[in-house]
Amino acid sequence: MDLFNPALEENITFVRPAYFIIAGFIGIPNVNFYFVFLLFVYVLSVVGNGTVLTLIIMDHTLKGPKYVAVFSLALTDILSSTAFLPKIIDMFLFDRRYISYNECLTFMFFGFTLLAMQCFNLVAMSYDRLIAIMYPLHYQVKVTQRFMINLIAFLWIFTITIFLIAVGFITRLSFCKSVVINSYFCDHGPLYRLGCNDVSPSFAIGILFTVIMLWIPLAFILATYCCIVYALSKISTAQERRKAFKTCTGHLSLVTIYFLPITLVFGIGSKMHPNARIINLSLTTIIPPMLNPIIYVFQTQEIKQALNKFIKKTSSTQAAEEISTRSNFFI
Image (cartoon, rainbow, N blue to C red; front, side, top):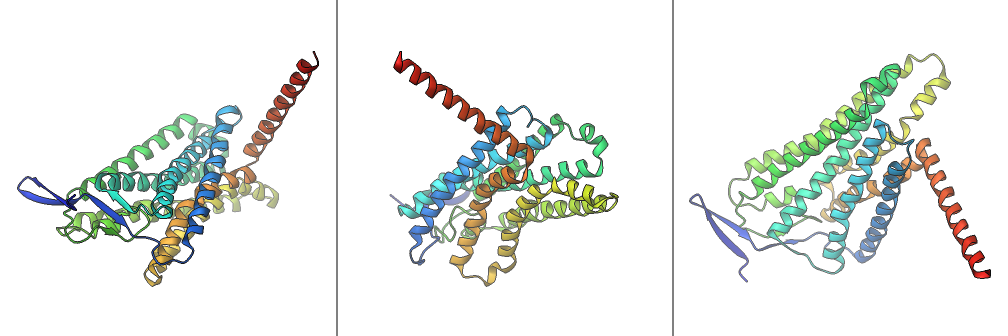
């Protein structure tokens, strides 16, 4: 098979490779243990977020606008883990680093779309907390379940649209230099830099990605917490301030887990060894989906109560089935 398949389009010859090679994690001793760890993380992510989704669907007390965003976050975490981890484990643990051109673009689209939606879900949740604390008497009017569903739906459509555009610009690139992507997945930056024609549109989109996915959401969330702190300072008693702020601790923990590692990588990434940067970026991709459900179970009283009720109900059902089985045996 030829490595490159030229395609003539509008009098311009595009050289599109039959496949790319993902070159991450090369030269790291005992790296297979890391991929086994990724498998463990994947199982925890699916089980944890699946439990949160099940509780929200089954428990009628978890039906407010806040839990629309929590549901979207848990769903995004499952999809993100499934998009990244099985493919990464397959590529590196079983040494299948070759990925076809179309599969690579699909991997990039779903990877970035789901990473961006993790961020935008946190933005929606921060807006929910802002209105709940600044306008507690008007919260149910200003933030309805329908409003939150529409907001989440808009964020999904917006995210899908911008990354479809990004993939569209990648298809306009001609790859005649190399097919080796120095990352752990079909990363946008390392991929478009392999192009040998004009990459300036993809370069501009890469900058836009960073602004849209990282800096604008982070600035918005920081601004909301500045407003929340100001609103809390107006509350007369310390006990009421602590009670109000406690409703934000779960979300604030998620924001810290998501944004702190990735901002550090972007801040000092140029000084890091390539393998260290790849491992740090991969961890910032896979760890938040694992920790998000744990944080919400332990820091959100309503979800904790729903989980306790679910466990008691399941235990009672199993006990009743066991008693019924024993009775039938003696009969």
